[in-house]
Length: 521
Ligand SMILES: Nc1ncnc2c1ncn2[C@@H]1O[C@H](COP(=O)(O)OP(=O)(O)O)[C@@H](O)[C@H]1O
Ligand SMILES: [Mg+2]
Image (cartoon, rainbow, N blue to C red; front, side, top):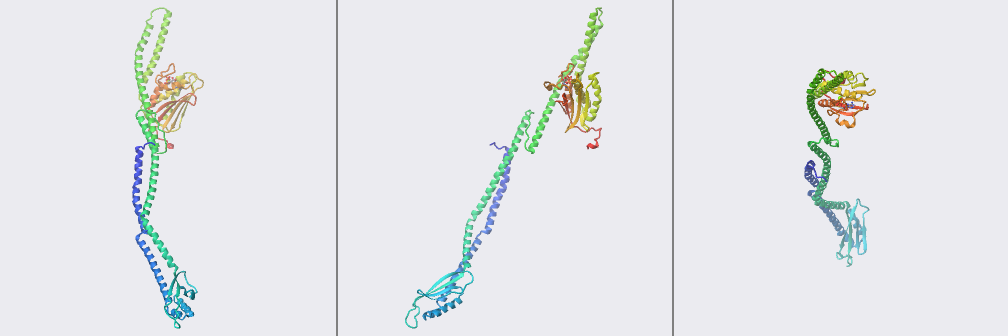
């Protein structure tokens, strides 16, 4: 795994801080919230209340028990029962039990037994509500009383009373006991529970932070990788390498930055090429100036000397006379050619800088079109000339140009095309002008032989020519002028089958002399 970059570290620290600040608050708040919420429901006061209610039920039950005991006593030790027993009067015993049942409605059954023998037993017809029985017994000792007739002892007698208490009281007592116990347990666990809550809460938040940080690293890594490659590219450009292009990726600000960077490098490359070319041309111009100067000076003496030789011949040898005339004619002709060359060289050397002014390229090309017959006349004289076609878009094409210099350029390009078609049947030259984005595109093409691949590189170099009478200065001048217009010129293959020269000029301010057309605003 790659080491984290500083940018990534910063993002992580920022995310960590953002996550941790609320985390600390959340822990404190969460802890106290859990504790408060818990303590509202689970606290000592309620616990005491619960315990109190258990005690209360206990007291109530005891009272009920005591009540049952008293009832039993009242039944067992009643004098009427003892009288009946003493008299061994079963019916009286039974009547006593009946009376007692009426007096104590909560008694479910009552019986009197002597040894194995049941003397009497009574139970009410029915009872209302669910009740729980409590069986209580009283032994009436044998020696209590003597029977009046005879000394016979009354056998030991047992009184059994089944008293009842409402079942609900028992149930409630049990429930209260269970609840009090549960509550006591909850109270004991209260610390543990709030600890658990906070623990779970912390665990969840922690997991969330880890996921967030992971995502952060992932996202920032994608961005930083691209930023790093941009930085590397910037360093290369700084070291003078203008061939770099940084691959685009992702639709975001880094993408925009990369695009802008690539465009900048492209522009730098173009302007460096432009500057280099102009510097080279400058050197060639200096060379042309010296050459013209050196050649021009001896031309007049040579010409005068030849003329003098011709004029001063006094002899009468007709063959020598003819030779002399031929030689003089050749010298005159060559001197004339040299003068033309010198003219072209010094014209190239003195080429002024383009002085740009706002104009509409349509108007400019209209002017150029009017000079076409003269160019045809110049190149083809009496021969049949190729067709020259002008296709100019019917749109405003505002540019900043030096009309005279640019005319010279188009003239050169048209001448080259026409010259390339010399000796061919029915040639075709086409000039096309149109707007393309922020540029105007001027294309001059022909259906001639085109430029051989090996010559394309040197096409715009001064003195490169394939013509016997060429100087090779035409395209050099064209390129210099186009570059000075902030444009560029390239060679391409033409659809027509021959050469195609493409000139691109930046769209400039509107020409002030010509108000914009209504349809275009
Ligand atoms: N339209 C064209 N078709 C074919 N070759 C061309 C064309 N234009 C220019 N060239 C080539 O480019 C060379 C340089 O042209 P240029 O600089 O105008 O000099 P020159 O016309 O004096 O030769 C020409 O000699 C020719 O070989
Ligand atoms: Mg030429």
